[in-house]
Length: 60
Image 1: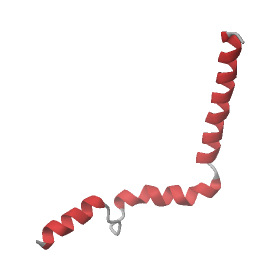
Image 2: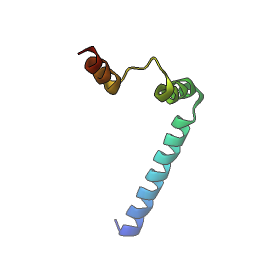
Image 3: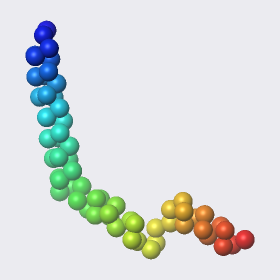
């Protein structure tokens, strides 16, 4: 197996993986989940580790 054939095989595999990731990212079944995750930084009801730390410091 020479380098040219190996390089071609790796290129084709990489392209197929890339296309698979793009199809997964833009599939309609993931849209609701991605929109929900996009709203997390501005959602006031979300309590992350920083919010919990601020609460425990204010309770002291």
